[in-house]
Each structure stands twice: as structure tokens, then as C-alpha cells.
Image 1 (tube, rainbow, N blue to C red):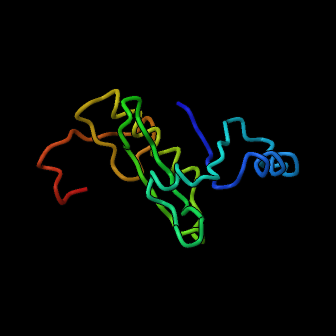
Image 2 (image 1 turned 180 degrees about the horizontal axis):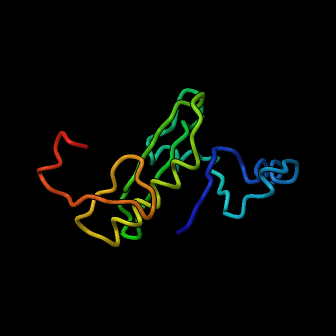
Length: 122
């Protein structure tokens, strides 16, 4: 699994942010810059008139398929614990085709078998 934190800021802004923030210094994954807005535009999260991106979270499998997409207004926070749970669910179903991880599923708890019988019952 690879994690990237992308923003519309420049590399130099990321470097200054890293050098002055104890929280950001703890990040161990790459922080690519998107000053041309190309990544934000390609993921359809760019607010063109402001030159800013919405908060987008994308889980992409090794085949390049988007398995999870969450787009939030910039004033709405995200829950890293819930995102981790969803990543774990995506990893589980990738290894266990035909299984379904219900809402609030956590590793080690019961999954369901995908079928028409589940409609309206989850």
C-alpha cells in the first residue's frame, strides 16, 4: 500500500510546512505538489475559480481502479480511523472475492456473502 498527500501548494510550501510543523514532520509518506492543478483537475476536485481543491480521498487498487472516492467540502473534516477501516475492508474483499464487508465491519469480524438476498437487509 502506498499513501500520498497531494495539495495544490508548491514543493517549497510543503518543505516549509514540514520544517515548521511537528505534526507534518511525523508524516512518512510522499507529499507531491500540484501547483499546475493537473492532479486536482484530473480527479475532478478542483474549484476552478478559486484555484483550490476540495478534500478528496481516493483508494486506487493495483490495476488502477478507483475502489473508494470521498470528496468533502474544505470545511468538513475527515476521520482517519474510518478511512483505515475502509482500506482494510477493500484489502479484505480483494483477497476474498464474493464477500461483503458491512458498515462498521472491522478486521476479524463477520463478513457477508454477496447475493440478492442482502438487498434491503444491510
